[in-house]
Length: 474
Image (cartoon, rainbow, N blue to C red; front, side, top):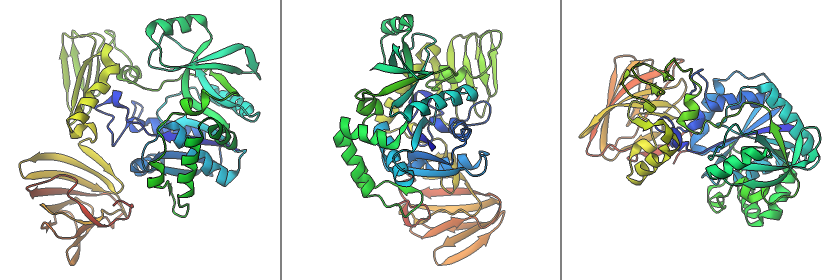
């Protein structure tokens, strides 16, 4: 039995300002209208498994679920989820997934671990590589997929294969894993012909991986097992016990297992592959004009060369410039030399250090019940556009320091305002004083769209006291 395991986490800081902590890289919509997460799901589903397991952070579950709901899958594929309370890197995440799979399907179930933010277009070649990996996994190997380098890339780890030790028709024994190299070393690896980029995709039997983790890193194995034993499986999706999982070490699968294991194989992936790790990579998905410019959105470039421009809401004009990276979002603008694309993460580090909200949130914020968009804010006021999905509701809550005025734009709203419950339609409104328990729900079959006007001496999102919530938020 083959079970694809999709890992969804990571901030994708090199793709700021589109990728943010609360809405990271896997959910970025590509030029063809699909997100990387959706493409990964379709790739996994194309292998015709009975079950697909997605391991993600609790905060991303509802976004993931909605993205999957928009994706047309073949009937009969069950979607399972395992929610991490905190990120602890790939080794603990995969170990928790292996425990979930072993519990449901036994030690011999084969896991195909797929990061959710990779792009592979050639499904046929990918499926053939998976078949080769499964055959090796059935022989007890821990299998990784290697990508043949196309240049001296310094942003990837490398795998050195033992060309003299062929394993089956397509596999090779792994000699060693190599850290991200200097440019000179990367050139040497490329010239030797025996190295592959480490794709971060793996295939092995659940029991084999757990046994190897217990042998190579018993403290990590024991900590993950303790967290799993403390986790209730009665509630779906299964959420890993927060207190126990927080005690697990933060470590990657390469460090914890793959570099220490003896029976490790690499299957060269003869398919196109990109981890979309920078704006250079994402820009490469957009066709270039005669001057080498790539544009997504509304832009005018005059006497400009080799630029990438992405604009969401407004026109961007560039005159007499070259080799620029311009990414415009409603609340943040990035301008950089294209050669510095890998350094965008330093901008995010500075934003985090200063506590700037744009490192974490977009102007439009996704919530389990829908979205809200901050339209305008200033001293003592904030204006939001709120969209509540059919059948969804916000928590029953109150605020200490702000009042709210809700105006329904379209659809219907069921509102709890203190002791009263009312139904409002378009052009109707309700005022909620500070300290009053209130709730907004959509009883209809179409989106409920509202304008919310907040007023008070503090308008931060942390001034929320939840009394009752359908989504398990405290």
